[in-house]
Length: 431
Image 1 (cartoon, rainbow, N blue to C red):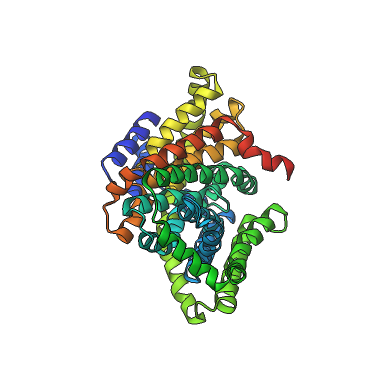
Image 2: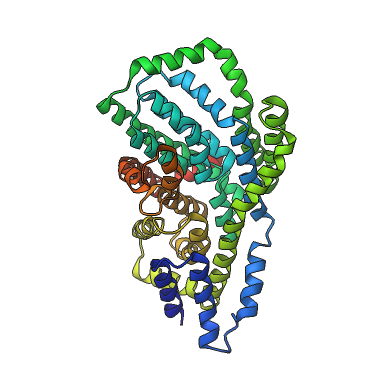
């Protein structure tokens, strides 16, 4: 029965059936095949509600609202100006400034598409004015947007923690160094590209001089509150002052304070609009998560995690081979499935085998998330590709082809993170 259920799910997914239906129908199948099966329709309904009746999961809409408020409040622009002043005149300085801006903005939004949208809408037009190639610019932002789910606070980390019981705070701590490592890998590719293809140094110098005319002190002063936001959010979590959910709430009030009273870039009357937009963005996510968790509980009743764990540990007795196999599977799945539902479905299946092979569950959570983050920029359904496509008016598949070098360096960083656990676990060991 478990084989039939999983095959039905995969077939529906490959046929392009909406993922909610692809999860719902296989969830009902076991009770239709066996009337005595405990996971009947009533159980599934309770699982849908119970799966999302969780305090940690509240962090997701709060971080989404915070990211939206800060994007509208001009935070991403002020972050970019700081990094452009510091490194803008160097070779690949502007592309690297975009990557670092995505890194910092990811520490605010917790979302890959939100990071790509907020940074891309501001940076892509500027980069085009400075003479950078359209496809390269779009690919750069799409790839760097993936940092939004790796650098904490990360929405997929919350989903992984809720799905597996692993500490969300520990995942947040573990994501810092991997996020920085991936950013460095993307910068190396940007540097190689700019060395090979050149840059319009005169336009870049003019842009840098215009920023300096504003005054370096003023640029830093304007960006101070933007830089302070991840410090407050992450510092509160790491210092044990607030939980991740409470930090999400703090981030919303901080975004309101900065946008309304410091930058004065939005009005109080706009708040309802932003809240409405966040609800609209969150509604499909929570619906997907509810069905994913319901499906996860059904396959747990069918003892799929134990069966998979037993199969893997009998067929694979090497953590190295297991992690390689998981990486390949997730890279493929990430091309077709969004990060949140993929983690909610697969994490409970893989985690027993990972623990049985001696792999730290926090490290495994980082590996899963980094893997699926690559899916944001891999054709045919990379979400970030579709986010940046309208900005440059180029088909998403064309941007995806241009993003292949970025994907290559992303995967190199993934391999280092996968096989050097201390990259993920070192910071947690000293805090």
